[in-house]
Every structure is written in structure tokens, then in C-alpha cells.
Image (cartoon, rainbow, N blue to C red; front, side, top):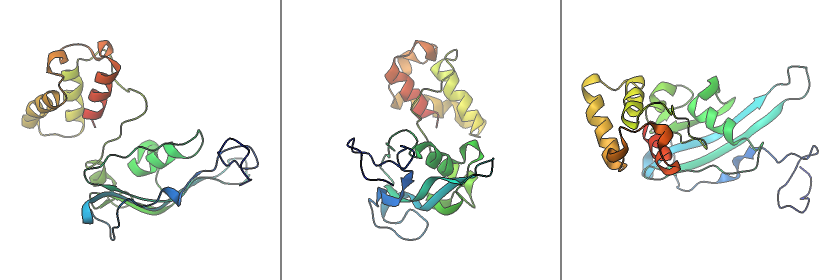
Amino acid sequence: VEAQRGNGIEEDEEGLPPPVDGSMGSSTAATGNGSQGGVFVQSRSVAKEYRNPNGGATFRAVKGVTLDVAQSGMFGLLGPNGAGKTTFIHCMTGMSDTSPDSGDAFVGGKSIVTELESARKRMGVCPQFDALNEFLSGREYLTLFANLRGVPVDKVAPLVEAYLDALDLQAKSASKCGAYSGGNKRKIGRAHV
């Protein structure tokens, strides 16, 4: 990594910002692999590299990320383009069949390496865009995702109603998601996870 070039962002020899590294720190001291001490999400030295298909050098997208998120906390990952944010989230969630090359993380005490399906049941991701089917109503959308996530049939309707109540969306629940305001789209997007 070269010295800073006046914009406050370190860049490599190709002018790219450095990958996400382990400098995120730890907000709560915790040990082990569970949710001890109020910590619900723990990442320990998560790293991911991509090999050049043409035989060139490997690219390290995520470099040993270690962090803790409190059980009642919310976590946002910010950084410049190309810093490894999306790759880190993919490693944490198994999205796009991505797993870390090294390290591990725990969600509610469940390893993303050895217990991914159990860990997924304990997490939600709110992407930077609204991945909504604009032709479904809010109620239909939540019902669809409850079924996809394996909620027992007899629990789907009460769960959907509870989410609609908690998010103050009952009045709009029959309207198509495409007609929702940006804030209400984010609410529905967060609720389906």
C-alpha cells in the first residue's frame, strides 16, 4: 500500500483502495464461539482470496476481519468501492456460494463454516438496494418469505401480522410494494429477513 494520495484513502499500486482488513476492531470483549457477554455476531480473522483464472496473482478481497456485534446491536459496513464489503457479507451469509478461505464467524453461537444453515436462521441482511417484487403487496411479500424460510404454515399469518403491526404497515399492507415510499420499502425489506 502506497502512502496516501491526498484524498484520505490509502491506495495500492493500481490506485485501488485496500481490501477490508482486520482493523474494524472489537466493540465488545468476548471469547469462544457463542453469544457470550451480549455479543451475537462474531467474526474471527475471516479472509477471502480470488485466484486469477489466467494464472496471475491472487487478489485478497477480505483480509482477516475480526469484529463483534452486540445482540441488540445493528451493524453497517461502510467503505470505498472495491474494499471487500460485499465479499465479506457474502462470506458471512453464504450468499453466492461464498465462504471464507480462512477464519470463522458465529451468529448466535452457530458457525458460518460448519453450521451455515443454522446461522442463517439467526441473521438478516438489509442490502443497499430494495430487492422487492414490486407486484406483490406487503402482506403477500412477507407471506412468501415466511414460507420460503420454513415458518410452519399455522404460524405464517400471525407472524406476518406481527411484522406489519411492528413496522406500522397495516394500512399499506394490501398495496403493491412498488407503490411504497422508499422508507416503507426498506421496512418490508428488513422484515423479510
